[in-house]
Image 1 (tube, rainbow, N blue to C red):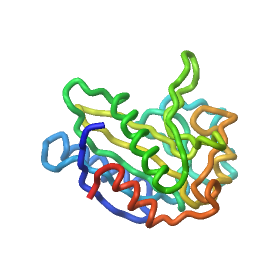
Image 2: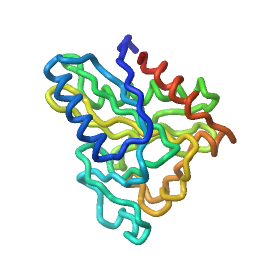
Image 3: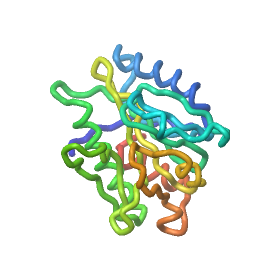
Length: 211
């Protein structure tokens, strides 16, 4: 994996719609070469986000009270909430490099980060005809711990990943996550019995060469 240093942007809890507005601005600046590649680390209040292919049957019951927002990224339904680390990647791809190539790099960098945090993890290849297995999975318990959904526009990536650190996992059970009815979503705290958001932020930033 070649060196790809990023500028790090740190935030706390940011409303999803506000984050999308800022991300659009960041992407535009990167397309115009007005800023370098960036990793934006933040969290969101509780929200479900859906891709354009998400079936209505995968959505949660509205009585749960968690908003559902359609987004322009790839992938299907994902939950965001406190205790989850979200990373948005605004990166100009090299000539001949596609979004699938970069997503694979993102998976590998996150596998490296989880290893440093003490959790063996892996990316998975998608068998022909199956739902996309994009993301990161635990090796021992075979659970999904990181969701990834990205897109590119005029050669610049947007959206990114969501790593479950120490938040409530219950809302994942109220909908069909990632297009997979049987997926078992997990978190660092569930797997290791402990998790520190500040440490996770630091290790993830290091894995992406972000400072």
